[in-house]
Image (cartoon, rainbow, N blue to C red; front, side, top):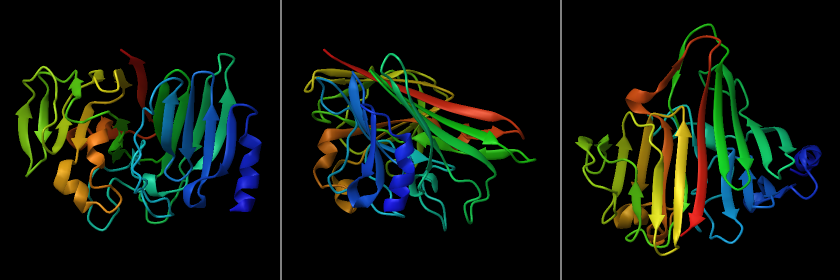
Length: 296
């Protein structure tokens, strides 16, 4: 690990990026900009922290999260690729979030923004996928994340992708999620049922697990307790997932505190299910998400 950290030091930027061991000894990047701070682990290319100056953390992390090779980090922004959800004989949500990514490049812009480029190792053992996958994170007044997939093979390749973003909220029972009125969704609680969102906003009174279909909408989280409005803008995405595990599922997860569901909500952007992405040979695809917030 010490040799690995030494090799990463060339990517440090004075006053902007420090690379050091994080929890579990895993390598991480600590990022400081004039407007915010952030933390990124190479394990899973996982953004675990983004916090604007003068605001509470935007991203939520479980106090019970594991930080170990082969284990998923609970909270922040897991990168789910090349599938979403369970898969027989394979890890849930794909192998990307369990793999240590390579640090390809770092840079700092004149306006203070910092960009980190991470690359998924190619030809992973047992993975039937040929191509390059990069995750580009830009930290500033906003958090911008881009998952870029390039098909290097001679055949079309199909995959699912989603940025499984966990947001910090004051009280799940008090927030509302706006921007999905009139959109069809799959309700995955107690089975899978196709429904249409007829409400002006999503409010939470029980376990919620919804996959919104054919939607490129910008979504906002209104949080009266933290007096904050969070805005989720995306491109290259036709799916939005909204999730909170509530009581029973929280207790069933070993890496999730029994009461932690009160302070989090997931609003996820990507392409899953019928919206999965198919790339022809030589074609690239970019999923882009921009997170912004303001106090109200």
